[in-house]
Amino acid sequence: MRSLSLASGAAATLLSGLVSAAATGAVPRSNNPPHYIATESRANSVREAFLVSWEGYEEYALPHDTLKPVSDEFEDDRNGWGASAVDALSTALVMREWDVVVSIIDHVESIDFSTTKTEVSLFETTIRYLGGLLSAYDLLDGPLADELPSNYSSSVPDILKQAQRLADNLKFAFDTPSGIPDNSLFFDPPRRGGSETNGLATIGTLVLEWTRLSDITGDNTYAELAQKAEGYLLDPQPKDIAEPFPGLLGGNVRIDNGTFTDGNGGWGGGTDSFYEYLIKMYLYDKDRFGDYRDRWIAAVDSSIENLASHPTSNPDLTFLAEWRGKTLQFSSQHLACFHGGNFILGGLTLDEPKYVEFGLRLVDACRVTYAETLTGIGPEVFGWQDNKLPPDAENNPPAPDGQAAFYEASGFWIKSANYVLRPEVIESYYYAYRATGDVKYQDWAWEAFENINKTCRAGSGYSSVKNVNEKDGGGFDDFQESFWFAEVLKYSFLIHNPDEPWQVKADHTNEFVFNTEAHPIRIFGGQETRVG
Ligand SMILES: *[C@@H]1O[C@H](CO)[C@@H](O)[C@H](O)[C@H]1NC(C)=O
Ligand SMILES: *[C@@H]1O[C@H](CO)[C@@H](O)[C@H](O)[C@H]1NC(C)=O
Ligand SMILES: *[C@@H]1O[C@H](CO)[C@@H](O)[C@H](O)[C@H]1NC(C)=O
Picture 1 (tube, helix red, strand yellow):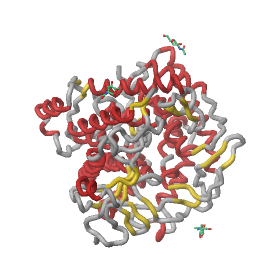
Picture 2: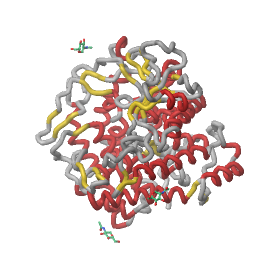
Picture 3: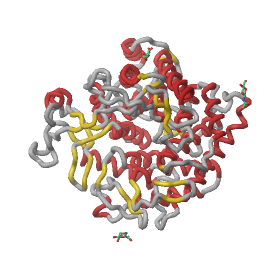
Picture 4: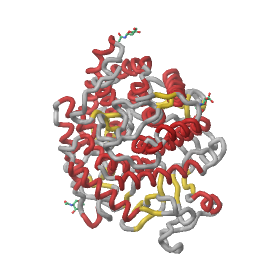
């Protein structure tokens, strides 16, 4: 692909208007993929933020999990195996920051995954550590193989061995009467936390990583465990509780017999990535995961029909409500804003422009949650009043005291004002751009990155902030989540970067699928492209 260096968003917009008028706004046919524009100066600014964050982490936190950038201290919130290093690896790889890559590989080889002092989350460990290691293996065994410094080529199989050791230490989580895993584990000695239930997302966001591990190693145990658990989510019981709308499920499942205990859900935290992985599994392998595709279609059709909601003060916006049984709650989250990108990916995968178009509407509404705050960053939780239900309906309250004017002007009100370096809004801009080639989405991603850089840059890195609607972010929480490396910096970089084998494609030529932590996983039977 052609690569351009442009200093400003306005210039990029103007130029792409000239070279690619057809791409703007339209949903492309898959036989006519969009033309992409690379903007090296923007990509390099994101790279600079990555290196600043990495150097702060390396100096003050490695081999611990997380940098506290204001106090220059560390925290072991992910079992002390160096979560930020493992989460940063696939981003360092797609940025070709080889000095960082080899430091992380040295660290990976030193991790002892058999021991930890603290509780292990099966879900968090799978998406961050297992996903990060599998992605590094897939990139280094695939398109980046020839670019790794040659004295490290013998380390590539070791990365896979570490992934397998980790999964071997985790797999007793599935040793329950139903096969629904316990999300909570302890290692010394190995024992389950003993929960009675597990959550929809924490059960349903394992299957990509565990299937991939089996497909690479040839040991089918891992895939069988994750797919057996997923089976209870594909056929949820009892029907009257578990599935209030077709394809849209409750939030918690009994570990003893695999039945749902409630019908409360949404596209936000706790349930979100279950839906995300349904279509991603189909993209991963169309032969094995057709029933996952069918359940994704049921969920998105039902969401369009039953959950789409427009705020009274800005009816052009489309949000998705949450549900408590069949009762809707007009509330959403930064976390849920991945949904636009997921609808778009599904639309591209299934050749259904209606899903791409609906996804783009969700992206527009999530952008408003950024554009209308004083920092230009969206809040953690927001609400609105639905314009179809009566304003006196019990589940349709007006804006709370003090936010009526903000709601009138914007279309949402703020329920939790903090920002913890989450990626979902920029993630959806990335999918929107890859689907349409419309540089508007690159400009939005750049604007969001500039605002995060301005508000969250703190001490030796970047920090969570307390209030996105105060000019300076309302103060720092002194915490740099590992997904800052894995997700925010990766999507912010890739959207301005030339086409590459790991980029999302609009024309059915995907070679990778991103796990929910933005680690690119090689699609089953994907091409063995090598670049460089
Ligand atoms: C690989 O080579 C570089 C110098 O080219 C050296 O700094 C590094 O220690 C070597 N690493 C290993 C694992 O041999
Ligand atoms: C699962 O367990 C719950 C609670 O003990 C029970 O009410 C329900 O009938 C069981 N369902 C099945 C299918 O065994
Ligand atoms: C990010 O912030 C740093 C430090 O304030 C500044 O030097 C840099 O230019 C900023 N980058 C962007 C893209 O705004």
